[in-house]
Image (cartoon, rainbow, N blue to C red; front, side, top):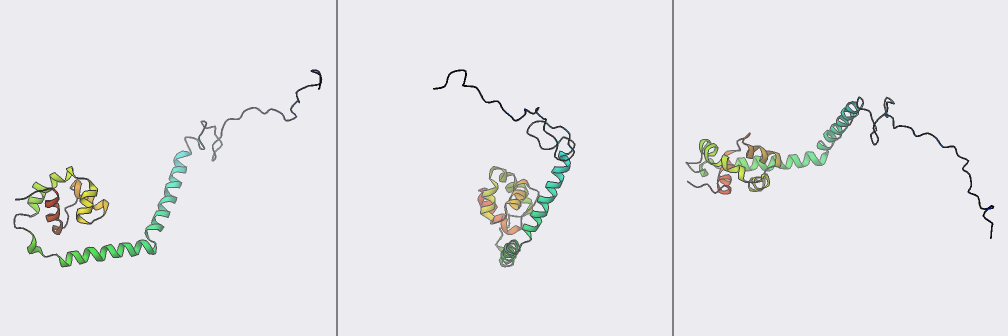
Length: 151
């Protein structure tokens, strides 16, 4: 066993460097801990990232698969419009009745409920619920049934 005098702690040969503050990845300014860019460079980086994401989004929405899905939806919607018979619409159910009786009641329903009842997209169902869009008259009967409005 070694004596206490022989037991020495090894000295480090690597020099201790002073702590450095984090720097901006673009301009080199000091930044707060955890940040990669300074306050002046963040908007530039965010804009570049947003433009890149938008570019990727446009590419994705124009892929062959996306175009085929859009085409199938348009075909289905146009076929529904062609097969719709305006005479099936009750006499009392017109645009005035829709705006006065049905539209105010839609706020009680979720966008999903409207979307499923009409078989439309989520953004279109949102616009219908908000009243920014008046749906095609073929949807009025289903919306009247959904809101339980009967004359």
